[in-house]
Length: 192
Image (cartoon, rainbow, N blue to C red; front, side):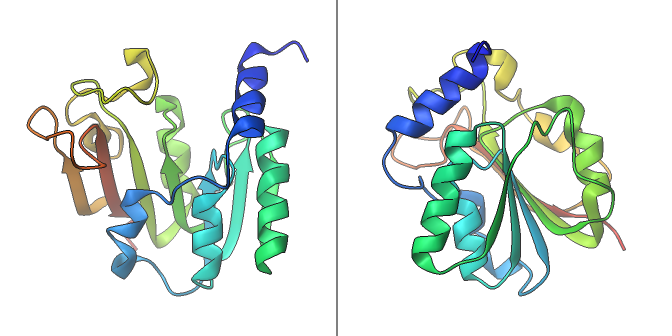
């Protein structure tokens, strides 16, 4: 293996316990999510979100660059009796096809150039659920470089054509007690 990024993520996923934590953007907005349809967990890691969505009855696809992450997701899905289609996939090189998903989730991943493809991947009325780190607050987690953190209100600017249903960005006002104090969270839909 000669790819240092892939090596880093494979190592992190191999050493981590369990599937991770379900994204706050999902937990805080479960009432907005579809009851059926196709969902994509993009850059899924070990799959906590994919598993949670599958438990809710959605047809779930989960993509990640790390084969270690996908293998761990597959094992956990099998142990829980859930069907999740996990795929090792470079989502930047191979973004989702247009109008294939009723829900796209992105958590703790930021590739700004992918924004138009994420919108295109939504079926009419489909939801984009997005959460990632902001620059103004750092609670000692997430990327060390501002290149991979959002500027103030940047998430809104990345997806201007969507209908906004939920948005939260505490920085710089939030306190460290809240699990989303250093995150921007958004739920928005593609207009029919």
